[in-house]
Image (tube, rainbow, N blue to C red; front, side, top):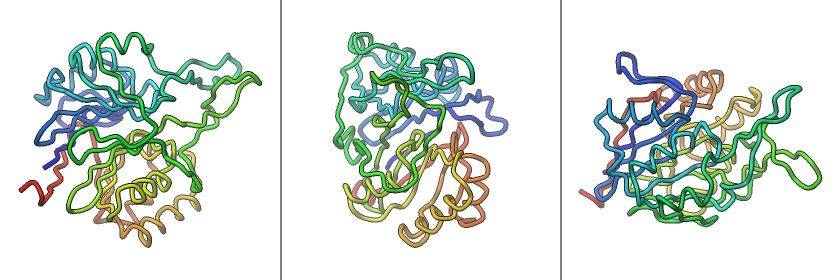
Length: 282
């Protein structure tokens, strides 16, 4: 059994008393471990919501970062101070300096808030561009490649190279995959590598059908024709998996997905827990 609780998100369950923030964090409970996937943008909100939900961050043995942007890593210092000594999994490019364009001002730094040295003082850092097993049947995708389909890209995201500013390649973007007997569960952070590219990577690596997709899919900047293409592939190529999308997916994309898959698209607000069964664990 796997239980995935949305700990931080842009919206919360009505009446939950939780705090909403633009960002994402999931608390994951397996039979063996307690995991954290991303930390949201703010340690205070991360800790407040976890406490409100009765989830003890001190019991986290392993944490995973989907990518370095601060709406997913801003709570990292708080998380590591509580889950001291945990293993922290990320792509090697997580330490690439990243920036966000701000009209006439110099681009703002939006990379990882802690240095490698600071992280290694309180966690066991595990960097890999290849899939890594974080817990029994829970894996990182590793680097999502190739990327023939649309990426979750923003023209505002930049890196600095010897030749000047360049688009962020999002090399560090990766997802989690739960390899269950009932199919794969793919958990996205922001989906900068592209929703379809990430799903193809998961199926190619782990095989089997994809039963559900969770998290932020970054469909904000895609046109309606591109979203229609995604809908077509989800229906014809993946058999219409259940969709628990939130954060940066975008209202228009969520509306179109809900119209296309009315019985499969479910709001995934902070405070919501989703349970996935595995017949091998019964």
